[in-house]
Length: 640
Ligand code: NFS
Image (cartoon, rainbow, N blue to C red; front, side, top):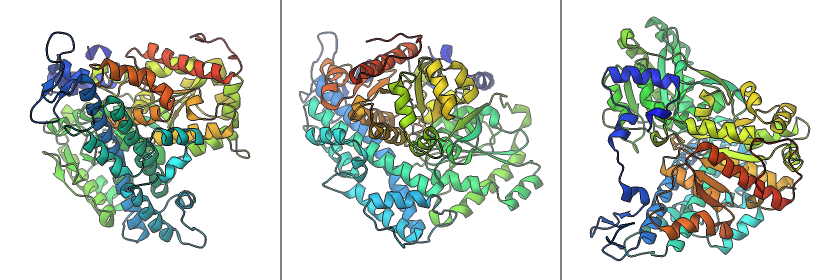
């Protein structure tokens, strides 16, 4: 089913040559898995203890409980809670490393790092109760880093950033006992509660799932975003290009892949080093081309305008172009298939994190105190490897697309309000008067189950056509960039009349790229700003807003989805969470939960149907708020 949905011409071109050369990719391995395990897919396979693995028979007269007596409800809910905790842990551990870097910068123990947004440093430090007057940036950085680290180890109380949420959400979280106390505590408690013979009540397990997810959204992810802005600069709208066509025939190509801007930022700096550029020229290359894959691509795109080579599913394809000298990776979303693909070419894969050891890769551990030296060493290795590129096998597709990225909760504020009256008023006003129907977040991974990202593109097109302003992050944003949706001129043509009118008047594109997956926290903040501005509801759950990660793949996406649901929003996934083997749990999270936290899940594979479900939800919220009728005819008419 997957090949049919491949739309990206660049991908098709590279896959054709891979096929001829007999090199496997993620799509081949995915197809070899068919049929995928039905028990696993339904969430009713339990591996929690060694009486098992056990499975529930969902249809026939087979077992209705595991050896311990666990039912489908318990098994599916435990699995979901654990996966969500893993996702939350991933974002949060990334945030912890950034806090360590901030401390090291404060102590003057780094090389190549600085405080690039001192204004945000002071603002966030004040939120943490740190006195900032008459203090040097380094001093504030040290104190802030230490305070942030306390968020991880706290046993009681509430996360500092959870106070950014509207009072209504905070009250709901307190009433439901899901307000996160400390980030690590929530992850540990979720693991403990899902051990054999522990929490057996699916509703109680959903409670821990929500709390550990909130510890990500209003904890780990939000910390990662804020500290990245402080250390590497807050993004500003910037033009760049995306797709495999950004690779250069006559330059040394260095791909940075993974997630932590600590690595990618300093590599981008090293690539501009005069000596290294001369070294590259001496090796016959015209320059050094640094391009990104996955969320690292988004981090350096929104801050430096560096090109994006591709998203998650393109990581092997980049290597299969035969034009990559070095792929340097850190953490998360790095397929083992990368080193397998690299074996067929001259490409060196360099791993830099002791947390992600990769057989077949050369390990060059990255430390803050020698970051620039290490980055230069890696670039030097790439240059020396340039001569080994086999030009007869080189296959760089020509496709690459122009885009604009780098919108944040703060700068959209500025853009929407104009220079002298920065505020969310123009957005709220235009939602109220019916020019903009609502706001939709379209985020997350690309998944071979769904082809190669086309679902995001169809979904976004349908949303903007129906006057929904779209905010994007992650691999979904890269996919839409490749298809031209982040090119304002193209997006204006596709947008409905009301949305087009507003975007042109305030000078923003209809599809806003807000960064990496941890930057989904920017969407939470933007929603809080809408509530603060007034007129569109008193809580996040009242906003005409919906989110989707239609091609979700990672456990991180589950944590993201759950923190949006727990914050009061509708979240659509294309393929269901692994819960559908339990009817009770499925009903609870797709229906009943809305009466508890205001948000809920929906699972819809077809992108147009998914867009319509999101729009119907937005219309329901508009009706409840008694907003004015929509100003223009809509291709998908009002549903309530
Ligand atoms: Ni997000 Fe980034 Fe992409 Fe999915 Fe992976 S890169 S953190 S998890 S695959 S969007």
